[in-house]
Every structure is written in structure tokens, then in C-alpha cells.
Length: 191
Ligand code: VGL
Ligand code: ZN
Image (cartoon, rainbow, N blue to C red):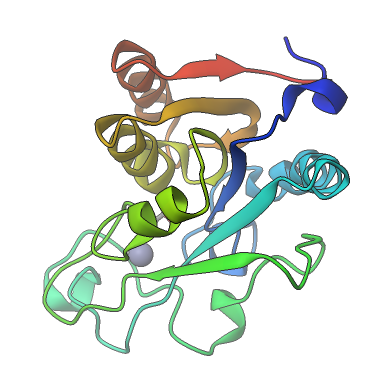
């Protein structure tokens, strides 16, 4: 357990992964209780703003007929189509105008689950002086997992905000959490 008001320090960044309508109840690829991460993340966002800690937010942003869609032989129903309502951030997520957006899933020839995958994110984090990442969002067993593992590979300290993420399947979520922790991620809940 950490205290949300004292957790964030100079050299930290908050990264919110794919909190988009399509991953929330009623969306095209809904994560059970996916919208429950929103009030938790809003508290982290307001703490980050108070501490002048940078806020990053990734979004899944697929072209029509993306290679990851079932109709193309991929694993997922069509979701997060560029410029659709489903691709918008959840309407209650209070991202400030200063949020650094990371757009992924735009390649025609492959999927990008990690916010680090061919986005240039690591270069931006380094130039912003970031040493430690606090990660929350959706889905824990897909894009959160991939982002956390890549952040660790890049030599960053990574803290998963355990009550600010939800998996697509419970079994996948448990497996992902163990993988992330075994790879060196800390998992913290905060009040
Ligand atoms: C995601 C499935 C397909 C995610 C993205 O953001 O976790 N999951 N595309
Ligand atoms: Zn996707």
C-alpha cells in the first residue's frame, strides 16, 4: 500500500494505458469493470498535476480492417477504430491538456500491444528525465502487461497500480501479474 499523495516523486511519470470506450462496458472489446479504473486514475492524475509529474496516455488506434481483427484472422473483434467513439478516452477520465499521448496499433502489418513498440516512447521518456513509471489502465493481460515488461527491459523502474487495472480474463490477469512481478515490476495499491 502506498499513499497516493506522497508516492509520486521527481523523475517519475504516470502512464495511463488505453482507457478507451471500446475497452469499457458497452464497448466493442469490453473488459469487465474496465470503467472502474477511471476514478482511481483520476486521483493519480490530480496528484501528478500537483507534483508536476508528467502524464502520458496511450491509445489503441486501429485502421479499418486491422490485422488484429477476427475478420483478418486476428484474435480480436474490431475495436478502437481511428476517430470512432469507441476509440475515444473514457469521458470521465480527467486527462489534462498537457497529457503526452502515445498512439499505437496504427501499423497495417502488425499489432502493437506495448506503448513502447515502435512509438519512440523510450526516447521521449529519456529526454524527459523519467526513471520510474507508474502504470495503470487496460487491459492488464494485454497492453498493460506488454508495456510494463518493455519498460523493465528498457531499464526503467516500473510500478503497476494494482487497483487501477483490469484484465480481459481473470486467469490471464493472474498470469500477467505474476509475469510482471517476476520480471521486476512492483505492484502497489494506493489509497
Ligand atoms: C488491447 C486487445 C486488443 C489492450 C488492445 O489495450 O489491452 N487489448 N487491443
Ligand atoms: Zn487493439
